[in-house]
Image 1 (tube, rainbow, N blue to C red):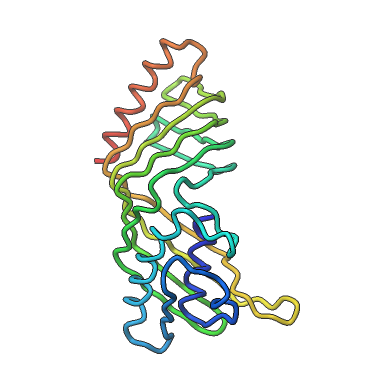
Image 2: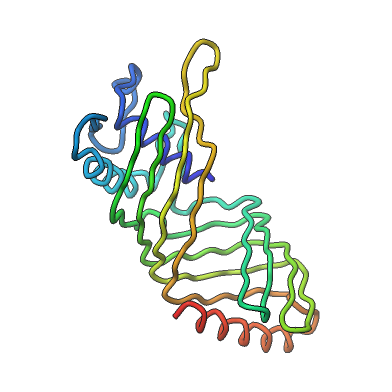
Length: 220
């Protein structure tokens, strides 16, 4: 969820002037998008597109660490392909590479004093993840479940970030709290390696090849 927090920081800096902004060296020149501007969505799009690659190495004074690679701690993934494959995987520790190459295609927003609504269309040319996992699932009649190393490569990821935030008062100050985030990716191609799906290493490679064929077919 760190990428979502970074997005909220970016939007906050573009909507309002913060009294501490001048004390922090931002990776790009700050731009304020006015809420009443009929072209504010284009403004958001341009600012987000500029700042995402600039945040690759993070901004320590804003407590923003690197987004590329992006740490994955206890991230959960669920994959279902008809009745053939059902698997859930929890990343114990790992990294995702490629977010700094994100291309913002379009932004739609609804902004009031009480609530923010953003739909952000995004393309990521290539997203690679690897690390240690724990998981379980079922492939045909074969039960899967273990832990170990995994990697996952997705090419041309297209998705829409659906983000909702509401005003919340705390210690006499008003903050925008993100309460909903949805993202359903559409992927051109995907390839994965997961060790220890089944105890036998040779059988594990066979199962993986079948899974990758299903992933390739379902992504077309």
